[in-house]
Image (cartoon, rainbow, N blue to C red):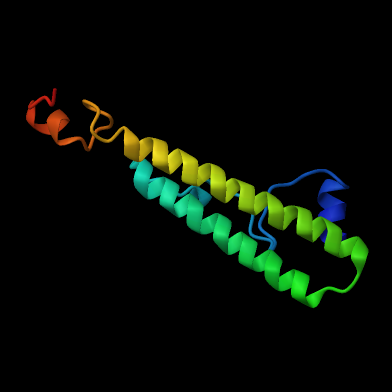
Length: 111
């Protein structure tokens, strides 16, 4: 923490836990909503697993409580991304829903 403190005091500085600074390469987006939402679902599950593992290792209640909160938050995020995916899937038959709609590419419209 000493090097971080020297540069940023107690301010927020976006970087990974490994110390890798934030960059636009961290964004994972294909432009396909199904692909992107599925990746978001996977990321939430990976985070939940990490919190599960930490909770198994930690015995201090002052550390466990925030970890349990963060784990619960990942579960809620997973549920919300799942709901968003369901909404996208429900609209797939809509005319020209997104650029990969075959009707968009061929000029054929679905009524």
